[in-house]
Length: 482
Ligand code: ASP
Ligand code: MG
Image (cartoon, rainbow, N blue to C red; front, top):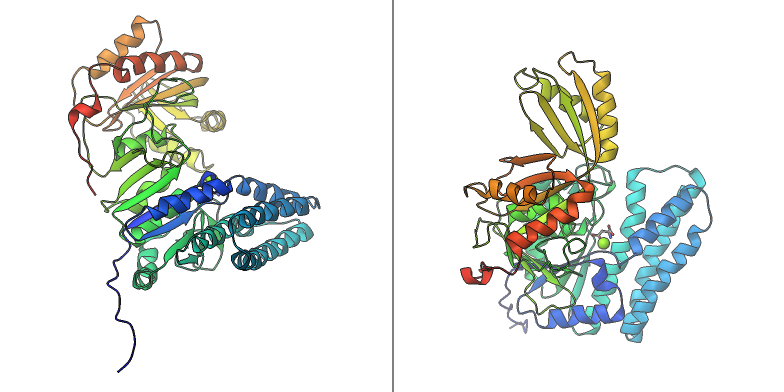
């Protein structure tokens, strides 16, 4: 008879936890991760960002080496020291030795890439990704070592080795989800058979041709959503150094408070127009999944943070949060026939797409097409549209220094009178609206005001709809599922 142990009753991983760079900043932060995981009842998979500040250092090193400035070596030394210092504070000698060897390997590879860049003075997006991805590799092995030290079993999975297929070698790549689904299945099955915590590197993947690619700054949220998809997770928790979504930007509205629950649509709307709390691409990998997204405060892990669910839910408060983007410009294309002449919007769109000029929102009327864009893009857009010499465009103007406020809440659109009430509040205080739009989104109303009026407008709206008034989320008595 074999004395093999019977196979444990292993449960598949259904919860993914992502730790951002600020959760890895100091020895005490890493200890906090250990204590969070000790309280965790389920088996989890982790996704990590680089230690806070490291990606910026890598970007500096990248540029210095490209311009043949030897100072990149000094930055390399800083990167090495920060990791080894953290490791030395937290690891016993044998774990430290292992981590030191692993980090040396990563740093050697990094050094080779940087040296190559400084010799040729030329780069590609995938070489840049090779440099920047070192941050997540260093942090993933560090976290794994710290967790091992605390008694957990861990395994690091570098995401260029587990099927995170990127669509292009770029700094803003995306995962080809059908390919990922196919390739990751086996990895997930294997991991589910194990009894360790898998630690995935955030921020990067690899193209089918074997070129590294990045998912954009703060892209580890996106990586975490992809990994959640790979495990068909029911929960994706991301720890941040903020309490979750707030009722407004606290820089404008100091009395803003956390929002306990949002729908995905609401959260996506808030992120698109200003809230920087989540990577805007996080939603796509989670489509078709009921995964609950939790944002938790790393410094107060016991607090509930914000829970984002995949269905609509209206509360007593019709508006749940206000976001603001102060970096807005407006290109106005006027002409008596622009509203009914077919094909004009298409023409504008393709003319601007040729130069990758992104339009945030289009608002049209019979006589005017309004394009909301970032100021830099708007300037170029105006010039390109003027060059078009389209006879239907009688006047093309550019207005800068605007701010866009999004008022977000499920059920907003169907509730009669919200828009007029909102407008009257602003009008009463003499705040002039440059533009107003309802209907573009099911869950948001947009207001465009002069930049210098944004703070006052936000204040007024917050006081009216989100102040300590009669309606409270608590009254609705929502229960958290999952
Ligand atoms: N480390 C990368 C960055 O700083 C990715 C991330 O933090 O999510 O952008
Ligand atoms: Mg980061």
